[in-house]
Length: 450
Image (cartoon, rainbow, N blue to C red; front, side, top):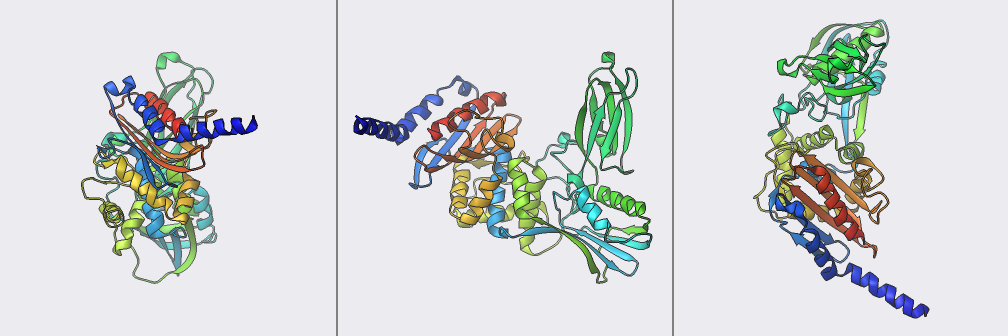
C-alpha cells in the first residue's frame, strides 16, 4: 500500500510540474477578463533544467517600472563588484575644510553627526570648499514627470544627499481649534514651515502637507484639518545646499563658525579627517527591498563613473548598462533604458530582456546571492510583505515589484515544488487597477511554486 501511495504522489508531482500542465494552466489564467482592456507579457525559465517553461508576448516592448532596478542592480554588482563602496569625505588643511560627495543615497543625519564631530569644538573655518564634481547639475533623469515632485520618490539628485535629500514632516493634533504640532527632521533653517492647519475642525477640509515646489521654494505648507497623527516625506530643492546648510548649523552648535562656503574643489591637498563608506550591498538592498529610486540612480551614476571622467552624466550610466546588455547578452538595440530606477517615461524593455538578465545574475554566484539578499520575499519582507501570505508561494518568491500609473510588474525567482529555481517576468501594461494585476500575478506565482 505504501509503495502504491508513493507512486501516486510521484505521479502527481511530475504531473503538476510538467511543461504541458503548466502551459495549460497559464493559458487558462490568460483567459481572465482582466485582459479585455489590458495587456501582459510573461516569461518563465527553469534555471536548473536550462529550459524555457513558458512565454507569452515576451518580445513586446513594455515599461518595466521599478522592476528595472533589478536589472540595474545586477549590472552594478557585476561591473562594480560586491566589495564596491560609495564615499563621502571631509578633509582639512589649516583653517579650511573640503567636503566631497559621491552621491551616497543612504547618508544619514547620524553619519553627518559623526563627520562633524571630527572637526573639533570652538574653532573657526575660513572656507568650506564643497566638491560636487562627481556628477553634473541635471538633478532629474530623462523622462521623469515634473509633477512627481515634491514627493520623496523623486528627489533632486546631487553628490551630497542627506536623508535622501528629503525632510520628514510629522503632524499631530493639538487642542480643538489650535494649530497642530509640526516636527521636521533633519531640523534646519534651510526650509521653513507655514502651519496653516487647525486641530479637530472638519470644516477646514482634508489635511495636506506640501512644499511650494512650483516656485522652487522650500516652504513646507500644512493646511486643513488635523484629527490624527500624519506625516509626509518632502524632497528639498538643491539637495547639496540642504546638506551643507545642515552641516554648518551642526558645526555652529559645536562652536565652530564657517566664514565662507565655496562650491568648488580647492586646488590644495587636504588631509583626510573623516570618510563615510557605504557598501554597494546596502544600496542594492534598499533599491530592491524598499524600491528606493535614489539608490538605483546612485548605482547608475557609479556605473557611468567607470568611463573615467567627471562630472558623470546620467546618460553615461545608462549607456554603460546598454553596452553591458549588448555585449554580454547579445541583445539588439531595439529597446531603451533612460534611467536606472524605472521612473522614466522613455524606458522600454521586453520580458525576454529581463529574463536574460535574471539568467545572467543566476550564473554569477556572488551577484546572485547579493540580489537574493535584497529582493523582497513573498509574505515576508519589503514590498512583497503583504502579498501571498498563507499560500504555497509564501517565502518561495523573491522578486522585485514595480508600479506606476497604468503599469504593474513583477520579476525575480521562484522555488518550484521539486526544488528547481525558476526565473520569471510578468509585465502588466495598460492596467488601471493595480490591485487586480497583483492578484493575477499572485496566481501565477502560486502556480510556479506548485
